[in-house]
Length: 228
Image 1 (cartoon, rainbow, N blue to C red):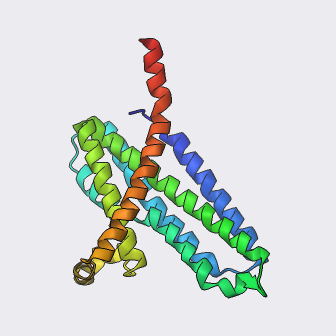
Image 2: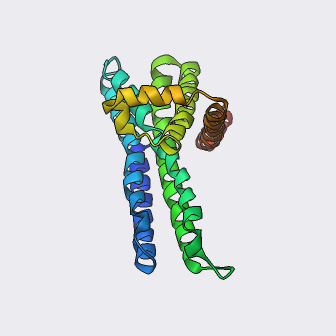
């Protein structure tokens, strides 16, 4: 795996987030602030990146630290917040009366759609970079095979987390504070439709992450081939 310069990655993601918030500011001035909740959702998408960054720094200085385990667990709990933001596109259908008037699509639809896609892109890129960062830690500590097992588990839990968040309206904080409700919702989610939904989202996450992984490591592979 190629080791990234995470200071530059952080600056890239911070710049993308700033641009996303700027676009929100422009759009909300022209329309309304209905989508203000996206700011909080984008913040939640940053939480797993902060956990992976802490794990990466900790591993470099204390590779045998037991704190890597709770950091990994916390990362797995909050990672679904990154892909979850995609489901906020649902609000476009809920507000269709504002977007289509007398059969004509209003310009505000395109403003809101573009803004939602930008929030989704920012959240997903932040989440996938955090996954890559944690995979790097596991790769160095336990090898490539286990690092990809972690990726598969992360994508599976990501798909299930999106299900719990969008369909069952459970948030990450309740996973830690309301275990009784979590247990009830997990039992309720054991059905064919929920399993298919979770699996579908997990596959999408895996495909996109595998694409990002390949793009990040292609140049590194070419450089090794030229050296040989």
